[in-house]
Image 1 (tube, rainbow, N blue to C red):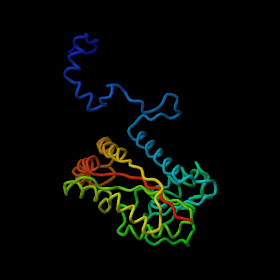
Image 2: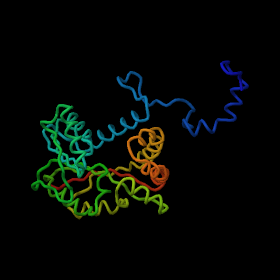
Image 3: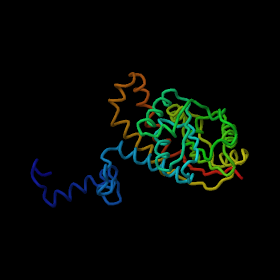
Image 4: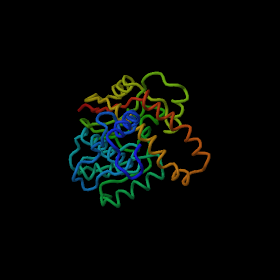
Amino acid sequence: MSGQGSTPTPEEVGAAYDRFGDLYAYTVGDAGLHIGLWSRPGEREPASTLTDLANRAQERQTDHHADALALAAGDHLLDIGCGNGRPAVRIARRTGARVTGITVSNDQVGRANEAARVAGVEDRVGFGLGNVLDLDFADESFDAALAIEVFVHLPDRPRAFREVARVLRPGGHFVLSEFTARGAPAADEEAAFRQTWACGPPTTLADTLERAAAAGLDPVRVEDQTQNCTFTGDLMGLLYTEHRAAIADRYDTDLVTELDALIPLVRSYTRDHLGYYLFLLRKPR
């Protein structure tokens, strides 16, 4: 190779690509061996880190779910498993809808209501403790319902479908994104996924449609988004490596040691054996 600080000769450049071409393909992609267009020129706040990129992908997914529901200003949406509340806030600001979010996490209730307050939408977006298996709402209370990756956590999915159908108004839509199983994973891979996400085993496409039908919900559209799930698994592995020191500072050593063993298994399971579908369902009028 050329001396440090000097420009390599064409022969040295050729030798470098002869030697490291496969490495470049593994690390930056093999479509062209150049930088990807992760952010479009002129974006006000272009993505500059893996976390930025992950957040933008989640925001696009939130928008996609909301677009599937076709919410109108004033519609009332039930956000099941609302997480930190930011998706609900984003949907409310984007559509003009009202949103009631529920979660089984006390911590998430606080974070979600704070997100609504900071965004200035607390007059039409609120969050509280709630369980989709036993919804504390009257029949036909909501124009639409949303559950992003929630049903995988549930011990009784058929009951959850019945509860959602009960609180939906006739003609209302329910968007559900669900993990599905594919292939034959090793036992340790599936166990790592279930432990990391505190969930049961992924279901099947047919089972989800059958459960929805049994609850009286008609399928409108089914989308295979497995490719996004696969990429997220890879990105999760990279972000864990990048932020491992901060994670170690936040949590105890035993947990981080456990995660060191689990994350590669979750990554391979997500890549090779996890499917991901979006279901748009409708309660008949």
